[in-house]
Image (tube, rainbow, N blue to C red; front, side, top):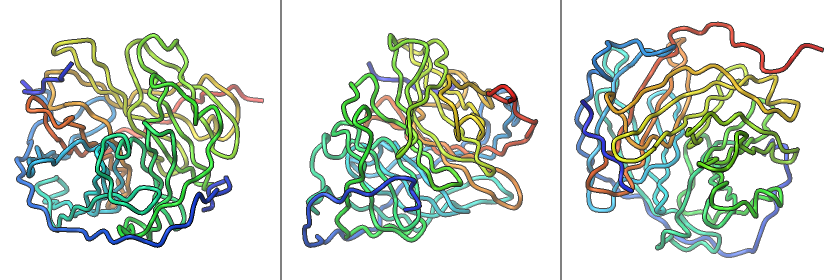
Length: 333
């Protein structure tokens, strides 16, 4: 049984640059992270829902390591961001297609809008992460701002002062119960933003097409969105968390159709690719990234340990083993 315990741009939008400050210096430093392999996701073998488990890791780093809340992957390379102000970049070591370790790890402090290394939780509260042409976008939930960091793919310029991106007024004034937790970039280049949708926020979760309009996603009971990314063809996968006290924790991955996201107001729903509870190797799963590796669609998930003694930083890999035709969330015509 898992030991997890939870504690109580071709963007399609205009970039609105805020301020002009000379770039500061932020030097990435090598970081030593111990890993322990996860061979079995739970007792059921390697097939779970429509996904096939491809290995995982428990990560243990130096003091202050963890709190991962956003993730991007490109083959074996990855870039992650924490909600306390850190970048983490490195390479996944794969053996026989299974995740066995990490290599070439570096960490750097993220810079704020004034080019200063972040030193507090409010400035560091990154929750959404996505790549667009020439930049990595980071959503800072506590400040309700979207920052663009210059980048070439996953090679973000750690020393560059980010620029603020214009977001819809309703998104900028969202309450903490409706904070943005997931960003995904559609094939058109348009960015979509998903809010968490906590308990008591109704049966529909607000979301935005940046530079466009608002739509909604069906909220199922206690599930809250914690991350998002785009699949080949334009469908979006969202990772969701369920926490109802004590050890009652779960993770779910849901797929939303490209046709729905490109038009209409919703509410949109889609098939569940994975659902797992406490008996599986899960924690507070907050980040999801998609990639094509050797012709397979690969999903990589990471957890936010809240820098708590009782929680873990996990990296889990799955292949989409059953790419059945998705049901269309919009009627014809």
